[in-house]
Image (tube, rainbow, N blue to C red; front, side, top):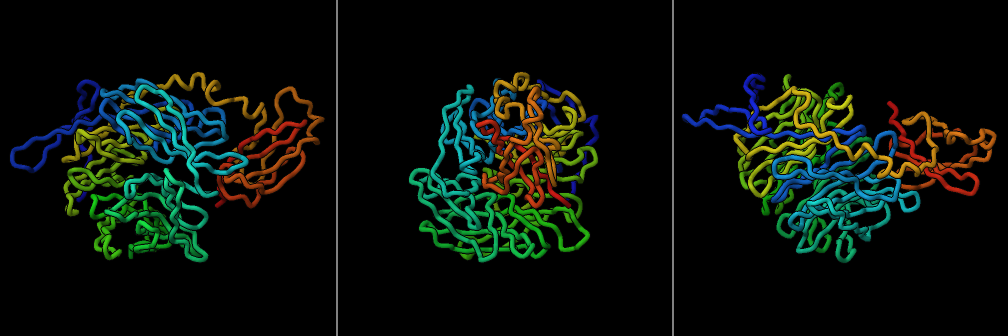
Length: 500
């Protein structure tokens, strides 16, 4: 059911919130949805991964690429009950790179942030940070995981907390308390990845993709408590072409649904579309598919079960006033369409996560680009309830913007001495880059420089001498050049671009 943006003249502001009057064909009922939008602006690049509401506010959890560096750090902003920023901080990290994957709350007023940390020697490590609502960092925990484990999310399965992800080519679940692991999937010659997981009764349900023979297809796995595979569904959507991937899974305790994105089979169609799959946990078969729009760029992002039914979060380019925006669709518990709403600014917006607070409010975390010179900034929206939903937009430049002073002294928190003045140029690069010596260093010493190129998992790819670093054949992603010079070791990051 299509919706159309309302004229911007219908928007007005009350106590810092933008309120949109919506008229619905429900007798003489007139209902209004209260929408609040906030963005955190800094010189770097921030991409929000999750919002975790609690009784007195909410945590907005992002990954931040710090200004003038190649460092990635976890970044947490806390909003009070009026959606004012009362503190922000970067997560402590002794390594070169740390990326936020997920966040949740198991204790009132405390958030746990799941990250993936890259170290030159150990490769990727799974780390859990805890912070309270006043900004106190409560420490970190590095669980025992298999080497090369790539975490995705946390579930509570049969009373224990598990981190679900993949190791090598196989989906993997790690018990946080005992370190026990369960693995499944992993077909010969195929690569299985996990993007999300949930629990249905005693069954662990993980979703993601399987890549095989240049084709990536949505994959859904059900796992019994002792690790046996209950079911495996690969490429469940007949409308998908050579690419599809599960974005999210949600459960109401007895049933579950999967949101996935796909490219149609037409060779000239590069748009990403989405559909929502209903899967029987008892038979392991797809029992229904709800399709989104059939044209344009409409990828899926997240799916949540709420007290009022299912809420689907997608990105859309279908609304002229909103540019690429955040689209919410509400379905009843049995899957009947209820309403939808498109939300966003006049800039480019990209949603990431949707959840419902204890008071019934809907929270959406995402990123917006345009407030600060074209860089991505983390943003959050809060809606009164699941619905009825309706369109909202604003082109006001100062709408809910908070310029974070944390980054005014970013050198004090990003450890700018990490590279000791060394850097690579060009950066990003595709075929080769050059090590640039610190200011004042004698160029005659260039011949004494020895380097080792490490891939994103910390594995040595090649070695050399001098300042020219060969990147040919490297997969896209953040690499590290380990420099040996005058008895010291310095680690310099270089981003390898994809080649088309």
